[in-house]
Image (tube, rainbow, N blue to C red):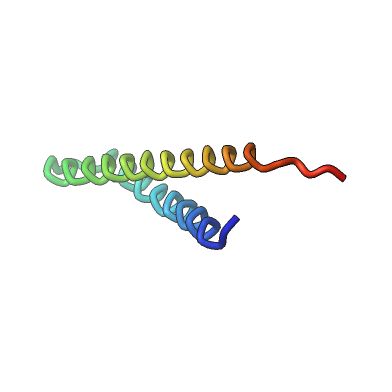
Length: 79
């Protein structure tokens, strides 16, 4: 595996971890908010975080498929 591939995997993992508190805290804020305008903004935050989470999951899935595919194409060495 190339260093850049390791860096990308690490960055995707970090990004996924950054999205979790955004999702959780915006959900918590929605539960306690009474202002319709603020609720609208919070829901936009939730939707954007969810869309970003889906994108991260898709990229991670593609990376896993590529890794599996490249491993299946490597010859098995015999001892």
